[in-house]
Image (spheres, chains in turn blue, purple):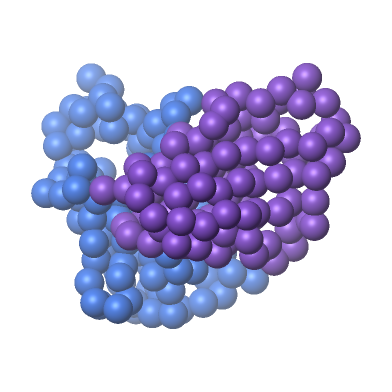
Amino acid sequence: QVQLVQSGAEVKKPGASVKVSCKVSGYTLTELSMHWVRQAPGKGLEWMGGFDPEDGETIYAQKFQGRVTMTEDTSTDTAYMELSSLRSEDTAVYYCATKGWYFDLWGRGTLVTVSS
Amino acid sequence: EIVMTQSPATLSVSPGERATLSCRASQSVSSNLAWYQQKPGQAPRLLIYGASTRATGIPARFSGSGSGTEFTLTISSLQSEDFAVYYCQQYNNWPAFGGGTKVEIK
């Protein structure tokens, strides 16, 4: 059974960074193109970025460029999303999602709360 | 940047009735359009991809149509478990989601 298991909830202060993990089971990470999507409380879905298998590179939504870094550890089949310079507007549930450019498989989400 | 606009924002429907949800793209996305269902506290679930292909395990009462800039998700006979928020997403360019349509009980 394929699963994406995300790390637990985080509380961060403004200006700090957060790193969220997403461990793949039932597949190897190299078989997937991992993406990250976030959802602020009561709001819609927002794509942050993901792996483009055609170019072999990770692409980031313009809104997050310079502030987000997505990495992978193929030895543990774990993907990471690090967001820096956090502000209150970054309070959201962060999802990893995969299986192509439309997302057939999702993690359960990680709540990141930014508060002083 | 392609902007996705969904309408209406809220749709009130009685169980057993048909629901029709719309999604418009600011420029053509061909048939590279997906639909998702999201219930409170849950991750989204893929319903439709390629504008009209149902994902694995999705009931036949869900159907998608359209191409280019205009798309429709139809739920032929609403069941109690279908009351949720629905999102469209284009993947012709970098992925972008619409703002969502909440389907509520009338």
